[in-house]
Image (cartoon, rainbow, N blue to C red; front, side, top):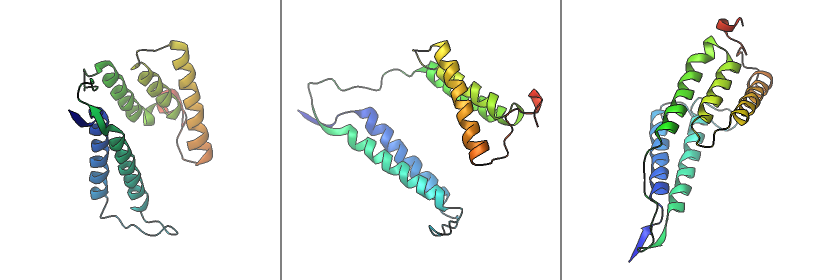
Length: 159
């Protein structure tokens, strides 16, 4: 017997990406689009929605294909609660800490907390990656783009 879904996880993830792209495109459809030369506030979000839908389509296509019915296809399996917890915590800590702690500590904490989600966690590697991401975000957002983000927030003596 032949099945046409080779990897249900990929098909489901791709469909979720396509649905999210459609949802955000619909939510932003009332924004003026503009042109490539003179972009409106809806131009960049629509481009991102299109890219997200395209990537979702690629993921769906990679999950489709003829699979032998006797071979064992990867199922959904158990939820990684550790990963879900630490990645969610990292996003919340970054969102709450960006104004009070500043960009540097918030980024460092978020990267470190999200690295705790991995089963291959190594302390030194996580600290180096956190420092590298803080330096990268400083170079891109503060120096490169000139955004008025403080590296240290008021709780740490910044501003």
